[in-house]
Length: 398
Image 1 (cartoon, one colour):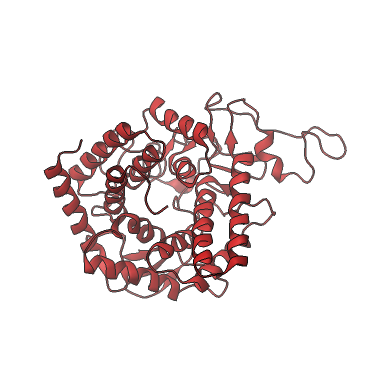
Image 2 (spheres, one colour):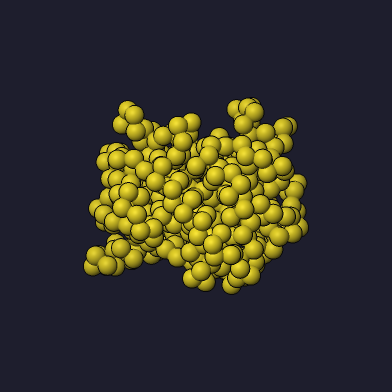
C-alpha cells in the first residue's frame, strides 16, 4: 500500500498545482509561466474527474468557470471550442473532435445544462457522416493534435459512448424521456459499431475493418472485381482495438488511451478488457504509466507525417511518449477489471513519476526523461482521480 504520509504529501502537491492553474476564466492547462495558458476543454474536464472531489474554493470556482467559458463560446452549430485563450478571450476550434464530449461529461458531473448538452450532441450526430453509429474526425483533431489519427477513431468514439450515457442520465433526471431514449439508442449503436469495426481478433484479416468504406460489401465489387485489401503488418496475433479506420485503411498500433476508455466505457466486455490489460503487461507499456501508443510510428511507414517534425519522433510526445494523465486512466481501468493489487502498484509508479517531475506533462518513452511542461493540470487531476478510484475500489464518475 502507498504509505499514508507520502500519499498525503503528494496529494497536497497535486492540489497546489491545481491552485496554480486556477484562473478567473477557468482551469488553465499549466501552472507555470512557460506552459499552456488557455482553458482547454479536454484538459480542464479530464482534470475535473479528480479535482471535483477536492475541498478547495479556488479550484472549484475554476472548474465552474471552465464550464461557463467553454459554453459561452459554443458555436452556432453546437460545437464546443478546443480551447479559449485567457489573454485574448478568443476561442480556437482546430482540434475540435473531443472537447464537446469532455464538456458533456464534465458538465453532467458538476453543473448540468441540458440545453447546452443537447446542442453539443446534436452537433456530434452530424459527425456520423455515413450512418454507421460512429463519428468521423479529421486528421490530428482529437487530443493527439499533431498525429495521424483520422476517420473513425477509437478514443473519440469510446468517449462518445460515455458522453451519451451521461446525457441519458441527465435527460432521465430532467424528465425528458424521449431524449433519454434517443441518447441510449445512440450509445448502444456506437458501442456495437466500435466492436464491429474496430475490434481486431488476431486473425490477420483486415476486410471487416475497412468494409464500411465500400459502396457495396465484400471482397469483390459489384462487377466481381477483387478489391485491394491492406495486409496486417504488426501485432498480427494480438487482440485489441485498432486506433482508427478510414477510407480503405486502418491504423495498426495500440492506442493506450482509446483501449483504456473502451474498458472504462463498457464498450469492451470482461474478456476484451482482460486481453487489453494483458497486452499492456506483455509489452511493458506501464513500467512508467503509460506510453501513449505502441509501437511508435517510424519514418517511412504509412502513418508517418513530415509535420511531426522533432516533437513526434519515435518514443516522444504522442508517438510513444509516457503520459501521466493516461496513467490515471490505466489505474482506473485496472480497478474496473478488479485487478486491485496491480492497480495499487500502478498508482505507486504513477506517484513516483509525478513526484520526481512536479506533475510534468509527458516523458520520453524509453528514458522516462521529462519532455513537456511542468505543473500540468491533468497530470495532477488524474493522479488524484486514480488514487480516489483505488481507495474506493470502484471507478468513480464515468
